[in-house]
Image: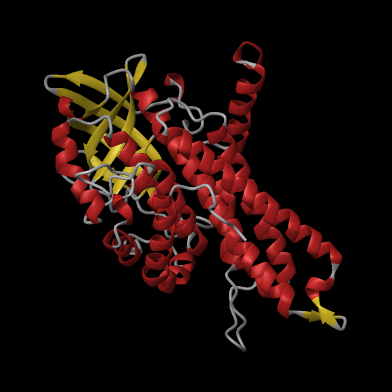
Length: 396
């Protein structure tokens, strides 16, 4: 039902091109990615490099590194929605590689950018973005962080632990937020060539099994001064600028998941006969699907508006960024739950043993929940909205 009537032509064309590439490279392996248990060898390199070969990792970058779009944030989020329609896991991988890290690299030196962006765009190297710790997640205040960087001759010595870090099991580089004195700094760290780094085994999660996450442990790791992203002591503002974009992307992923669930539900309502007629004849489900379709269109408009504000050069996309994340991901969870209910036992089952029938809904159900949690829990997003609405002098 969706019609990109107001989107720039370049983004409409990108959506069509991305959809074709995703159906060719990701869709054939998406069910494998969603079902397999996380191991060090299970990173979906085939899908990852297939998306890169299709030029989708170049979307966020200007020439000479990327596509040079006039609307790179809107384009990247549109691609995220298209990926999430087939694999929420891979949308999470894409968010790290093509939303969080590119924004972090915007604060890097020209030397680092010239060396690393081609590796990112080609898909030859995976990249990570690390802010969370065992005791620091939505709260990234100095007091909550325990990964510390001490200044030394020519750079910093880093000690600490990061947790839930996407792509870390396979990544070459990580942009990591660390504590430096009473402030924070963002450092770009070579994971594979820096003595003192240990990356743990992948976490075993309920869903998003293709989005490998793990701990990164730093023990007296030297990071040269030229690897500071932005200024020393300004790392939190760098991290927030990345996470704001990431939250819009997660809102877009929620839209993709919700659209996939809605399409499955509508097909079932049209083809499942019950009490002498199609299930879709029941007014309850007619009204419920009409409600969900309306919500999906609203969620899509929210992420598009937030991304368009960034592309216009506005310093902040709030409160639309928080709205897009909180609303889009809630709609995803609600729509998947309804679609599973419509399918009954077929939605709950991974596979019917006798017939081999399989519906993607159990995977969507497992995957959708994390969208409400990571990159700033939805409760935090509501607080951001409230602060804009009521004022920080009242809300705190």
